[in-house]
Length: 311
Length: 201
Image 1 (cartoon, helix red, strand yellow):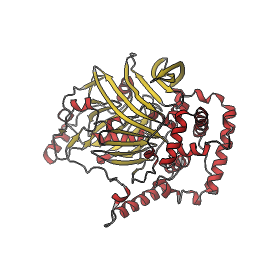
Image 2: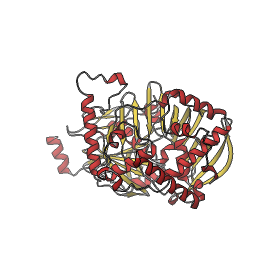
Image 3: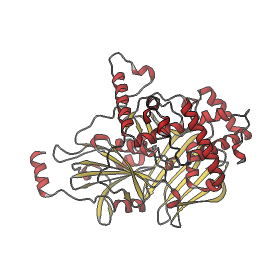
Image 4: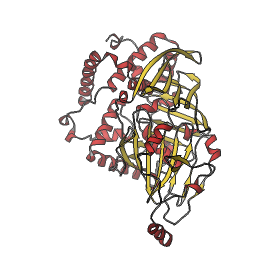
């Protein structure tokens, strides 16, 4: 208890000192994201992604409190936040990751206010997030709750790549969400680094975990978008595995991709390795990242022969 | 500096507990009602959150090793596993775990012991509303794309990998689950949480 008091007092003293000398903190993107993380609200949210004429859209009920979001649709329920996720659905899981990053977002993104607006009859303001001078993201923030009530992510050509909007909104939440979470979680602890670049097109390799099915999970982020690269030994025939999708080509290299409402999956085989990238990064970022990860390729004929003979 | 001064008779403590998710359902109803119409309460809530945000954005306050038993986390590991730590303390413990292999090992041991206790015969975990934390068993030579948005689901079918018996197994929605859980620790997740992939039918 004494230790906690010391920490609290020390933190407050430090905070007062810093707040006194950094008055422009509220203009920082990190500040807005932190406010959005703390926002308390509920309602229904539509999220969609449009890319190369393909579209994927979903609607979900959301409750947001204490940095945790509970998303419900049909009989599925997911509670997510702070590196924890519990999914009560067909493939139920409860995971708790040990990892968090503090990035200087201003090194890549600049945020500016673009005036006032309304969303669902409530007063709101518009934030523009630019990257190298072009608009990357527009966020409409509810004035009273700081909730992000609408978001648009733009591709490099200026088209809307992903959008999200609350179609019902309230600042109240279901009291049940305040119940203590006593569920057991599978703890995910960082492991040694894998043979992947520590920086991929501006995304930093933050940590690596033992992933599912014997794979390893390398987590990258630039502070706004993020992705994980899952690698495992062996080779998957993606063409047979993913029906109805055409190969996705970057710099003459073929990948397989799946477009979801709020994320992308890209899969390929590199020599001796199967790789899957899961993340929310926009198309131009994705192409740059793929250029710095292991390229698609096939095993040597000796390896193929060995596998054919001995499995 | 003005917004750092609070009325001691106001709702600061209640709001603070609310933001930490520590209220009872009845108390949450009270707070929700306050935030739905009371302008003063909303202002006070926003001011409190501003302070918390400012605190969180400070450089990490390093705890002198001498203040911790043996420089490690000790009993706080149990509280961490039980989800009993409040936001700031949770972050400090998490940061220490990233850097300290001894505490990570101890946490793994603790977690293993908890799982062993839960698996003992006669322990009815359903009484506490627990769900299985064990990931789905590996499915040999299978690749599954499932649990995603309706439009994508229509375009995707479950497929079988072909080749030798040593083919890897990737259950794509397991990968998505792991990514989303990790990504939720990052600030950008607040703007566009991707878990809609899992929750959508």
